[in-house]
Length: 118
Image 1 (cartoon, one colour):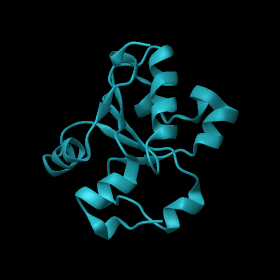
Image 2 (cartoon, rainbow, N blue to C red):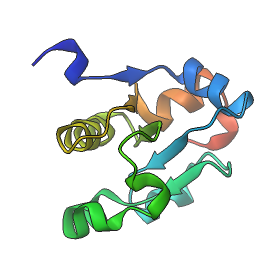
Image 3 (cartoon, rainbow, N blue to C red):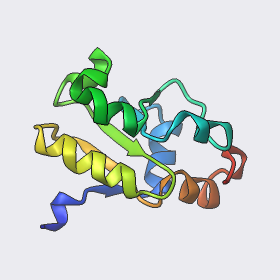
Image 4 (tube, rainbow, N blue to C red):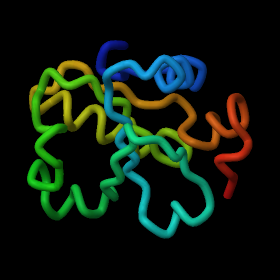
């Protein structure tokens, strides 16, 4: 695999996107029970559990995420699931999909502890 097969953004880059209200979607692929422990509360966040994606594939996505030109940041707990989803989406033709390096745990540690830890 090439480095471009593992596209990531840092927690700092995500914070800038959220702060500047740049046009993008934050796709949280964690399971619903995980949201009880930590989450980023922002209108740009869409939650679709990875298990739901495994069952429904592209049908799990709301219409605004189906455009392959949409700028999407994928997030999970530590960055493993989000990287898998990012690679899967890119293999299906999405061009602007990036995994949050270190997941919500890194975001909470480096940017905003109020999102919570688990």
